[in-house]
Image (cartoon, rainbow, N blue to C red; front, side):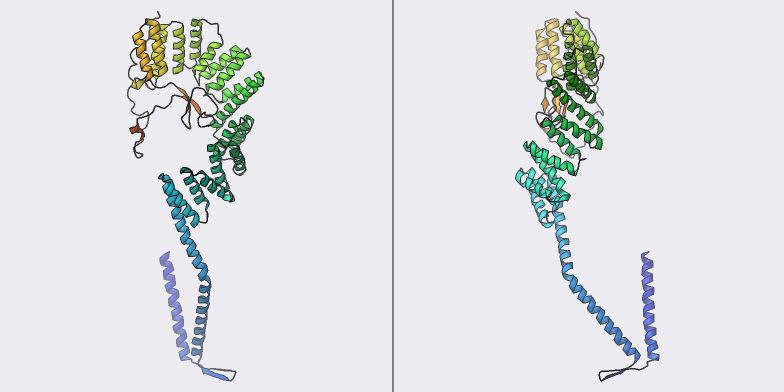
Amino acid sequence: MRALIIAWRVVVGLVLIAAVVAGAAFFSDHPGRVEIVWQGWQVDTSVGVLAAAVGLVVMLGALLVTLVGALRRLPRNFRRRRETRRRRRGEAALTSAVVALAAGQAAEARLAARRAETLLDGAPVALLLAAEAAQRLGKTAAARRAYTALLERPESEFLGLRGLIGQALRSGEDDTALRLAERARRLRPDARWLVDSLLVLEARAGDWQAARDTLAVAARRGSLPEERARHHQGVVLYELSLARERDGASREAASLAARAQALATDLAGPACHHARLLIALGRRRAAAKAIERAWRTAPHPDLARLYLEINPDATPLGRAAALQRLAAHNPEAAESHLAIAEAALAARLWGEARRHLGLVAMSSPDAASAAPSRRLCLLMARLEESENGDAAASRQWLDRALGASPDPCYVCSHCGAESAQWQVLCPECGGFDTLQWTAPRVQRPAVAASADASAPLMLPGLDAPARPSPPSGLAATPQSDK
């Protein structure tokens, strides 16, 4: 295509040259005579000379017009080139700020961001980077000024609100954060982080009806994943149930608790609350079914203890049989074996207790390292002392308990804080619906923690070592009761 265009231009040029030559030859063969008389002046010339003179005048006029236009455009072009250079320098400064932030050099990032802000006339991205750098340096006031400057522009108002909401949440200014969040919701009601922030603020304020409304709008708009929205709704219904219980409306509280248990199936707290309400209403059979339903998805020691409270006058053998029925709803869970073992110890069924403790040891994630949990060690110490009166063996298990892996507890998925009791808000970071029943993370050695970031990723579950036999004293086969 390009070659065709060049060929076309060559042809047009040759045609023009041929036309000029033909014209010159024509006027040469037919010179003619032109006479011009004007204001006492008389000009005699040939037609060819007159045509050449007219052409020269036209060319000079066109050149003059072009020159005048170039002079008029010169200031504008100069400003444009200067703005282009400033923009390029500003974009380079923005890149330097981003790279410095990624490298953890907040001071250098702040200088580059301020330079970009000057070169780009306070561009929103430059202000945002300056605020982030100031925040990392601990200069809260400077970060707040940058975020506030973002509020002055409609296109960057939402960015400024997000930064100010984060600052208010970190400093505990919940009223300010809630006011800013309401303003941000008018701009972008579908933002997921905004829904999370509103839920945290409404939960801290104890305004559970507002939290319920926020979740309803978020679910309708699809701002949260469906599973997560359902779980949050269950937690909010649990708190509403507690409020109705305090008001004396036990039946309404039980209805709300049933819905909470159905939505948050992985939490034992709402299930325990539901069962307690049913027991208080005299509906013991319904309470047992609620606990059994919860045991399928969230086996927990509190559920086992509450299950025994349904029939408080039962004998030790009867309590052991009751826990056998409960464990049948999730027979593979470690908590099922531990609950049966504790009841068997109380009923003096030593062989049954040892069998279930052995099964726990075999199914434990730490079985590969022969490190039973603390609770397992304590139960084994109790078994050795009660069955055989072997104080030495019991003391060995107590010693092992000191270095044993921790038992499951409620761990915050955001900050990793541990809590003995389940709560809607994390007691450490204040996160909403972040506590999960799981084993705490074991601290790794410092060398492993400081491994190079370029090290290859390890995929858990591949090439796992074979599981060894359970620790000494734990038999996986049943023994006869004494």
